[in-house]
Amino acid sequence: MATEGVQPTPSPDATERILAFLRAEAEAKRVALCDNAEANRKTFLDTLKIAAYPLAVVLAIAGFLGIKSASDLMESIRKEAQQQSRAEIERMQGEIRATLKAQFEAPSIQAIVREAARESTATTAAPLIKNEVSRQVQVRVRAEQPQIRATVVAETKKGVDAMAPVVSEQVQQQASAAESRIRSQIAPFGDVTRAGTLSTLARNGNGEAFDQLVAMANSSSNPDVKALAVTTQNQLYLEYDQAFYSTRIFKEHKTNEQLLALLDDALPLARKAAIDGLSAAGIKSAVPKLITMMKNDPFILVREAAYHALKQLTGKDIEPLDTASWDRWWEENKVAWPK
Image (cartoon, rainbow, N blue to C red; front, top):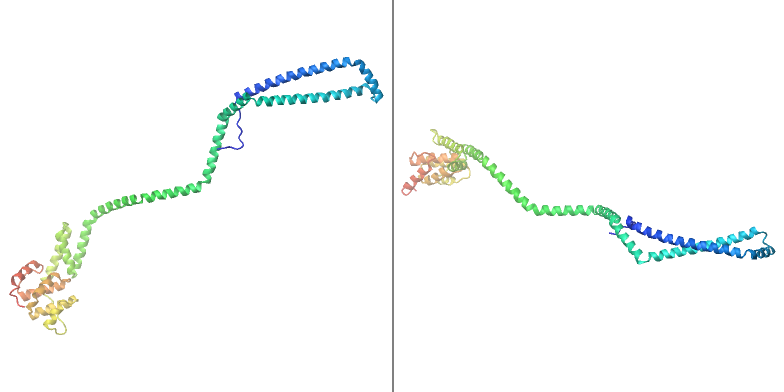
């Protein structure tokens, strides 16, 4: 990178060689000039001695021409000598300059200069160049900081986006592991809570909740779940087999066909009243439907009514929750059973 305003400085050794050469050249010229001046002075004195007599004639002529005294003549001669000396000095200076120029254009001087420049560059200019390059780099970096920052942000975003699937997978694995641990820890309590809810619903007349509680107790190894199922069954058994059973009847008289149709009514109390009516009328053809309702009706009160109707219509005192025994009895008697 080029650096403006920085001039390489010659090394001490190269400078010393150049100066020694210049001093030698200058001394030689000075001696030559001194010798030349001395020769000129001697020539001038000799000329004066030779011209002493003719000088008188010159003075006489000068007086005739208007020169007032010898002092005026000497002043004129001195001025002429000064002019000649200045001209001679200028000539000698020109010769010195020409000689020095010729010497500096000589291959030896140019080689010395080139060597001095190389040494100067190696010893002096190199640190300057390094500092200037560093300064220029800093200036350029500061100028490019917004672009550098934007590039860093963009590349970072790309890297994060590329890592997103891996991160998501790791997070999912960690979350799944944590969820599994939590599930394993709360599973026993969750089963107990669910069994308690089903038990409450069953005791309030929800037959489907009772069926789910029984199935849950049969498949679970949790003793609390089994205990809830057993206590719920016991309570419902006592309610089924109570000494006093409260029947329900319709306010308006219904025919047997109407009562049979009402076994599929949407209202549980209507189904209970239809069962109680069929039982009171002794309609034995309703037994298959009553067995199904005792096992599967969504409401406990309807199941209880079906159980009491079966006991009255069949004369069998089978336990209310022993549905398997009712099924076996029906298989044995359905062929001969009144239609």
